[in-house]
Image (cartoon, rainbow, N blue to C red; front, side):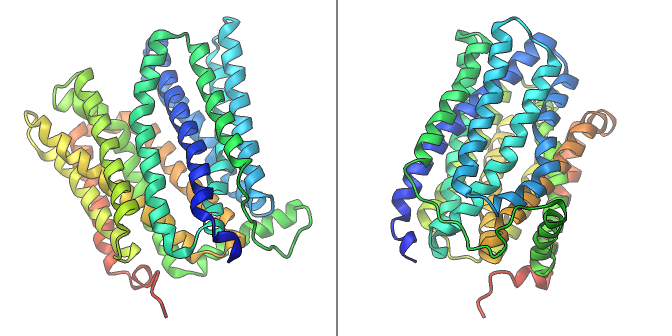
Length: 408
């Protein structure tokens, strides 16, 4: 296609904007966590903040996908970025005025989540419209590299910013990042798929469009099973992700420095995984990589709970490998969706996926503290890691999943 000839230049411009936006957002998110921890010292406050930042996106995500597939995807990303920045500005002004209400913070985090519900699926649904199909896995790998660098640099920048500046000033970083991302999008053309039904979506039509999104998944038995297994895996992964600091503190007897190391090496592992995909462009089938990475990630988590408490540096190594596996899994999963789903319903499918990924996270957050206290942190790692590895093994015996990506 003619519009895909200059795809590299388009992605370079988009990636520069998104990279700066991701780093500033990561820095601000980490700064908010630090501020809440210092001001309130409550795990419950942090959990509610995390839920406020995720649950709205899960609830409205499928409906957002309906409109993403109808609207101009470039403008959708720009307006979503602008809306998130506006919410951040409201928080910043409230801090300047000395109004530090938790209710307002939760409300703004929830509204930021609404903006993200439109931005991320629109971004993912735009990629196949710009780049050739043969490059989708490489692009997914580079996207994972950008996210992993942000995961490493963002918290460091956030910690530095909250040390030097007031929380109100730190929040302005997110607005700067959004402006850069929006400006970058102004310089690229993103085509939209041809959609026969151009009328405004009524409630009945929106419901019908949502059904089309579900049908795109359910009519493909391989995608259906992949979504089921991914939902179970996410339900297991998210509580473990929340418990990593507790594992470091309680089981391995570490402190702030050790917690920072574990956080950093996970990001380094993500960076390595993204580099492998972006530079070497593996020829292994995507579903095979998904299954293998599930097994590897599950084993690293289980072993983290099995190894003796005096082997902290083994935990560091396992966490690094886990970061690599998680990135290759995510990039491969995204590419499978981009290859299997028709462009005109892709926004809906990605919205459904993000909702399915977030809802288990919320459930995990609600039950994480009780489970860790009752069973022991390391035993949670052993059990949930084992389930994740088992999902990878079972996937190899599922003919529908193994049929994904086969050229006929």
